[in-house]
Length: 92
Image (tube, rainbow, N blue to C red; front, side, top):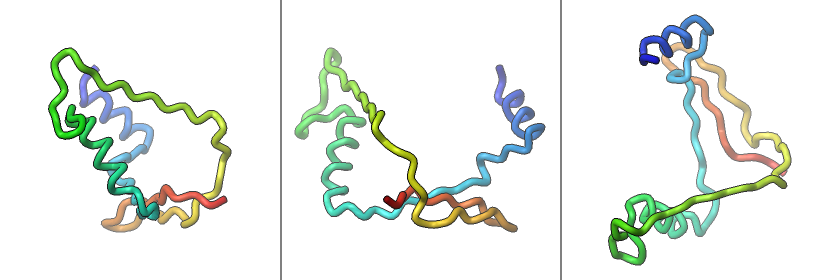
C-alpha cells in the first residue's frame, strides 16, 4: 500500500487528520521530573548511562477501570486557516 493510496482514501472519505490540532495544559506539579525519566528511557538512557545492546525497555499500560468523562473545554471547530482544536483534559 502506498502513501498516495492512503491519501486518496482520506480525501474520498473527507478525513483531514492534518487539519486537527490538540493541546495539553500541564497541571501536575511533578510532570517535568516524571517526563524527563520517561524521555531518558526513550533515548535508551538509565540513571545517566546508555543502555547496552542486550538491554531493553518494555512499556505496558493497562487502565481497564477508566470511565468516560467529559472534556473540560469544548472542541473548537475548524475555521479558515485554523485546525480543529481538541483539549485532552477531562472533568470528573
